[in-house]
Length: 110
Length: 111
Image (tube, each protein chain N blue to C red):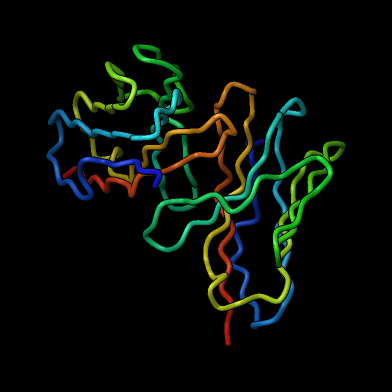
């Protein structure tokens, strides 16, 4: 089993749609969780951290389910500019050893 | 503004050549990382360093070594490049919150 697994997609959605991505992780003792966004031919950049109680940033909502060992990212009212690859990142062993999922590709179409 | 700078955006090397990839950060971060990114595999950790002269192996250290002589600089070395090391190499440093800041990447082709 991979340490961090994501559905690779691609997800193709119309503008205005709501889309959700999940990510599972193997180590139940993992401490911190993040979603990164990577545009084509660019470096990854932090989208948002994921807190135990769940957190929201505008149209983006992140949630953590420790019992089932997954995190999720919900994007509401999708924009064309949301088209990117979304990477799930887990601080797997609590020592800044960040492990990445393979990424989920999202394309938002007019 | 936060800055991680990788020395080369594109490199083409021949099998058996020694390759140096350099990375410099200006944020006084303790932790620095080298990843490689391949289609379908995502980012895989090669090495990371949590202090000067300290290093830890990641998932795929074979064929690579690293050097951290100064806090701001973390170098990745391929002693004898092979074709399966053709990849995008990404350097990052992390803040105390755990946020990773990446360089623009170095695309290495080994012929």
